[in-house]
Image (cartoon, rainbow, N blue to C red):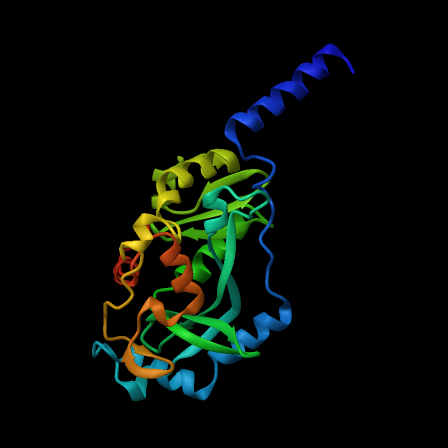
Length: 262
């Protein structure tokens, strides 16, 4: 091995050791199968779900339930959230983990909603309805920015990213504020989220104090697909787990969904 090549190898090894991350944290999160995507979309398109969507779109009087005429557009997309294992620095942990599949729904007057679906007891069910189309929107933006990358959300600050090729790239204004317009290496991103959230993971004093969650709150009167009561993030088993791990309440998430995208 030449002296120049040896120096390059040693320099790369030193960088990895200093950052404590690059190689072991760049693994890709597993994605859903085509069959799962198809089943999730079918769950979002059932007559019962469409009836609930009619009530959802009519909840503020913008359109009547009878005139809402909701429809599901496009395919169900996988939605990934920042992984607590990655935050903790687990060896080989992917940056993000799959939480649910989302389908975009629109009403006759142009309102948009996101239907969250998860697999329960062998079948796919809609467990939450959220205003807007963030999930499908950022899936498209991320695919354009980094084809083949994993689009994921950091729920604590409502930031969206795409990760791949050793980089974490921002997809919205919150993400730009977190990692800069050029993004960050996977290693540098892990250092940032570890510093921000490691003391809020399950089992931490923060979590035991009851601050990491707050899912008993009732933030809005949006109808759930499975009941006529308020929708909260806690109604999604997967979503609630990710948010609790990072110390974000369901109320905070739904308030953020009302913001304009930056």
